Image (tube, rainbow, N blue to C red; front, side, top):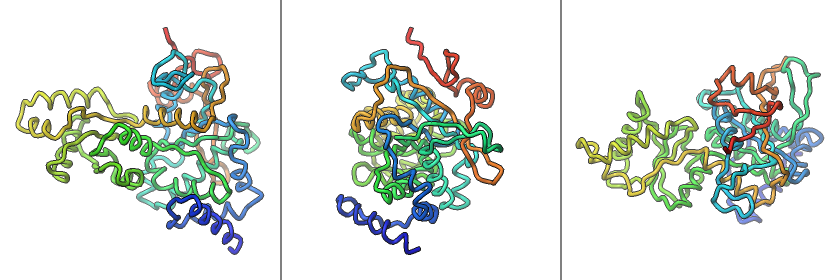
Amino acid sequence: MKKLIFPIAVLLAAVSCNDRAPVVQDTIPYVKQIAVDTAGTFSLVRHYRAGGTKGSIALIGEPEECLLLSRAFLTADEVDNIDGKAAPDRLPDFAGETFDVLLDDYNAPYLRLVSASRDTLREVAVRNAVMALDTVAFSDASDRSSRLRKNGAKVFVLASSLLSGYGRFDIDTLFKMAGREALILSSEEALVGSAVQSGIKHAAVWAPAEAGKAYFSYAADRIDLTVITPEGGDIRTAFRNLLRQYRQRKPNTVLDAVLLDSFTADMDELAAEVEHIHRQITEEDMSFDSMLAVGFRFLEPTSCLTNACYRLLREKNLFTHNIAYPSARYFQTEESMDGEYVPVEVSLDYLARRFGGMNTPAVSHEDNYIYVPDYD
């Protein structure tokens, strides 16, 4: 135990010297365990980003959200690749980049873990980050001799606000103890950042109550957030229930936006319901219409995350600058023979059979892991 005193003391001193808020939360035992094993995983963490621009962008989270997010990253064309301005240039924004998509099937759904033990989800977050950083994967969970090589992550994208809200502190702490700064992006950080940048002052967060702390940690005094978990048989009914709850909790407050903690929300249906409210057919419609600001909008995490990741790579000069289409490899967490969960590489054919073609990126090369957008 004495071996831990020095690294943790150094961590706290480093945080203080950088004029950041001191760490007041204790990390989980698993992080302390890694810090003691200096010849094993901790050595891997110490060499983070040693390869410069060569690492992958790791997308980590529950399977469906990661598949949808990977499709967005592989097809994104929102900026000019030369000057970074917001103008499509018919070239993928992440040209030449490699994505390692970690579909955490073993631990999903995360909401179940929060109900059981919050520290469990914290450990899952750290284990998944270490898995993404490692260069080892498997073709068969039951056969440890089926080892594969993969890229180590240079950027971690946490698709789940629950995974980030409960475990990001511990990932960050582990890397700081090794003298490294982990480049982490999360859905709630991207959503709040986009809202602030857009000048939004009052927003409702459509999310599970358990995800609230993740959003509030980024809001600070920059934006007034209200986390609401509406009920409803369909998305339009649920949206109306959200407005009712917001009106009750924030009377006489104009709502600028709704931040959607979802990669699957039907944006067309939500837009149609807003248009219906604007027509003021009923008394409740009139009441709701008076609540919605001019320019009211929905923000969803997919575009916010792709934009945030592009800006981060540009700011840190981490683009590979390879002349190639972006590529992705998919890994599913499965239980090994010794009871641990490990990353097992899976094909797009397997994912299409399991999840359906809608959520899996299309391929037009023989290589299952290369996506070629159709710009015609």
